[in-house]
Length: 198
Image 1: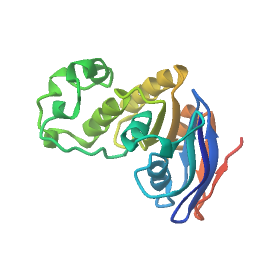
Image 2: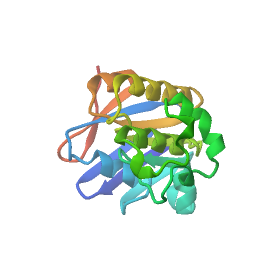
Image 3: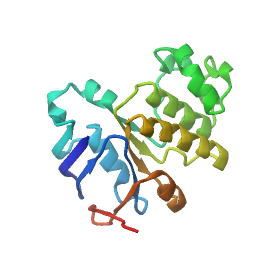
Image 4: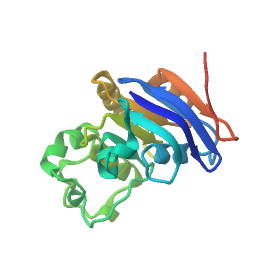
């Protein structure tokens, strides 16, 4: 279980639990701080408060270990090498996910600048899923995808959730939020979150 207690970053203040095998959808207006919240939980930005995984404090783990267990996926993932396959520790191991997401198996040697925004988004998801994280923090993971590709992503994440992965999924799409989330959190303009109960 992921436990967030009194997490503070700029105007954001959040406390909640994320159970194993649970997906919570995170909504709110653009610029309200959803990305800041996800990045803070992943310890990518300075923040105050307590974040625990299975009772273990985030501070007791080296940052790379924490981020492998609690993985943040940006809406526009970062790229630091020239070709696609250089971003994967084992490109061959990634191929089943690459195929599942409708990408050509030959895209490994492609230069990154050849990729469309949607292709980069799907390959970023492949990279995140390869880590086999306990918690996925997804920041608009289907924002650049058509409805068919988005449905594949939702299906893939649903399988991970069934296997015990916890997911906090930021989305502007109300229909998607109700499809993927067992609960929906709404971030208000004052930076606090509240559960949107049906």
